[in-house]
Length: 342
Image 1 (cartoon, rainbow, N blue to C red):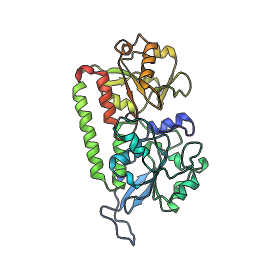
Image 2 (spheres, helix red, strand yellow):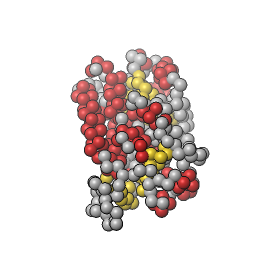
Image 3 (cartoon, helix red, strand yellow):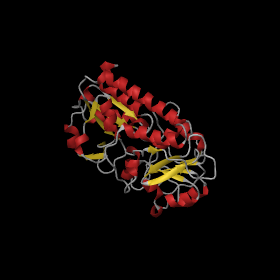
Image 4 (spheres, rainbow, N blue to C red):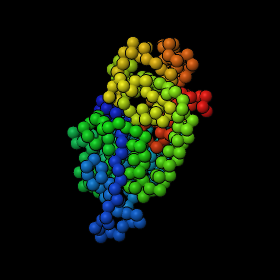
């Protein structure tokens, strides 16, 4: 992942809280070309209708501070359609995911100052499908190719549902179901819906197995923080309203600062953090040389926390965000919060 887009807070917003639009199959498209098996497929995305007569073959994945979309394509087995990928993160709970992303083509594009693909470079890639993490990835005023620009060269476009509004805005309360919706959308677009449903079913089964072990145990309070990514004060990157709240709930836990804000991050004072009941510290690894050291440093600052007394923390990376591996975050949080159950 690269968080160098419009401001930093909005970059994180698009990554953490993207939800996906619902796939909707249409009647046969009126075309002179014979449809491929299972096609046409029509997706309603950000209020516009896009019809696919066959699976995309020249896919461009914009950065937008996300890794969810490229990870979903890898999970669905269609990453060989990518001609340029701008997403990366550098850490993952999925074995081999980091290397798999590194091996994807980049299109040799000179990225703009938001570490994303500018208009002329995008058009030059001659894509037939462009994925943006947020609808702002198609804003002309930001120097990006618009949806109309891309339609003119034969490319359909896609952005997750919760990011279809104003730049940096969030719609509703994000949940793991948003990750499943993303998989279903892309599964329909690429003609691999059965694979998408298998991935979703496996995820649900693993989450259910964790839930069975933790259902009757006391809810542990978890503080999520991204060290070194403060967007204001020292504790301005503490998790507030994000997909992680649903992930924590499924792990038998609750966000210690869930009620502190209706925004993605709570900008807290040291006093607020010190007074909080924190049973488990969750450190999100973003470009850290030693996330375990980050966690231990925080625990040492607040020895009154139960998390510090019991040395109870967990380090996560891409699985805590929108994407195909939320079940791994559920499992790891549950094991940290309820070690006696595992």
